[in-house]
Image 1 (cartoon, helix red, strand yellow):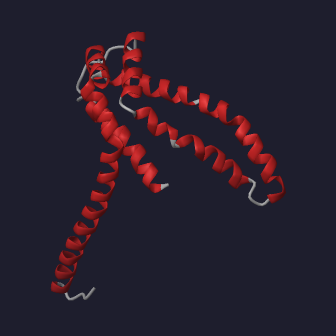
Image 2 (cartoon, helix red, strand yellow; image 1 turned 180 degrees about the horizontal axis):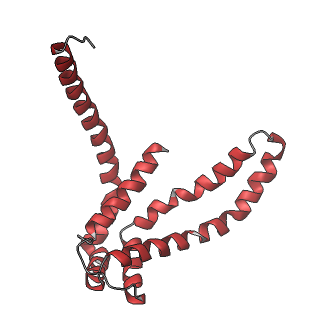
Image 3 (cartoon, helix red, strand yellow; image 1 turned 90 degrees about the vertical axis):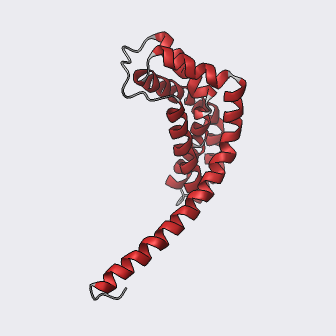
Length: 167
């Protein structure tokens, strides 16, 4: 689950980073055209894929609420399966929210340019490569964290020893 959360966060961060330096821009008001271009970015960048990980968590959270009632497990599973399409349909709300947030942070010209990138062959190739890149980045981050931690601990021990403390 931690790995999925990291993927979700990384995918969202990468997608927003690719959208450009938005904070210094005069973004104006949120217009339907801006929201539509932003929606194209959300779906074209694969950001909406990150929302996929959220849906199964609802069923898991509901099941955990009733873990002390094993006699209802079969019925609960059936009800949750029945509700799955309804829960899935709610993802569109999150796509719309993400589009409006993005539209509030970028101007229409840049939104359209970013949307065009994600619909281009290069953009599609980027989106296709993104899951593998994030997997590799996750491993690289673990390696980096371990190395930097060890270096920091070595320095901390040395400095603390100078002050008379053995760690």
